[in-house]
Image (cartoon, helix red, strand yellow):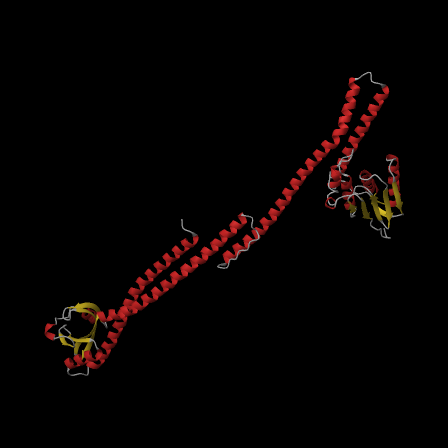
Length: 465
């Protein structure tokens, strides 16, 4: 099957060839007839000159010879009966009666008689024009003839010039077709390259079309298509990355749940089996085991609550309940609660009255998790401060490596992979989510084996509010 540029070139070549043949053939016959008409008119003009002069001549034979010589044509004078009376090119004795010649017969009926005929006397074809003339009281026929080969020689000269023009046009046409075909081939090759680039996801590759408006429009469309495909590919990559992240997060959740729930569940099962298998167990021991079962059950319940809270915070399903309160009072209450729950640890607080607009319960979660995190990763005193609207929790614990600082707010992430009961690695994740909901930012300063400082700046409340 032919390619587009080959098909177009073939069709155009065929069309030009057919047109050249048609016009060549038509021009041949048209030019030939035109040249015959031109010579016929020339003969008629010459004939009229002779007719206007012969009526004044007394010696008709001499005049006919003189007229033939001066005009360069054969001039013949016939009687009304068709007999040859004078001829400028032939002897009268060899000439037959012309009464039945076509040109003579036509001249009897109209002004001129015309015929192309072979002359047996001169042995060649002639163009003959005859007309009737009255000399005195007698009618005659005057005929003027010219060799047909003279007419054809002039015709061939003209037609040859036309053929040369047609040949030049044909050559130019073939040259133009070849260039046209080459341009189309180049544009099609550019299109193929563009489609290949799109197929290979090379959306930023530039292609230039300039041969025809249609190709330019196709090029513009392909550019738009490339941008759309690139945008869709980016969206697909983002979606794929999101799916992978969700899958990884689900795996992390399952892993965390499996790891963190394993010990308390195992404890519950172990104590329950012991109680079930030994009906005569000591009452004090039974009470102790039941307390262990209750404690571990509470741990499991609290971990489930924390997971539920993490999901709600991440999906923004937990709306803020904003109110105005003193952040200093809230911080004092939380620090006091740690004094009861962690009697062996020291948490020092230094604060000042600071009015804020926020969700009290969520801010309580923030303070609890920051202090709890400091207690887990240190053994000394934990310092809690609220000065100049900046809340900070400082410890002298194990610290955080610089490369891990950006990761510690991720879900289920714990420094050194440590695990504590009821941990799940969600504490700082809660803090980060809640502060973002309040348009706040958690700042972390830490040095490995020296301690860490977690802080955030509370937004000021305008006087109007």
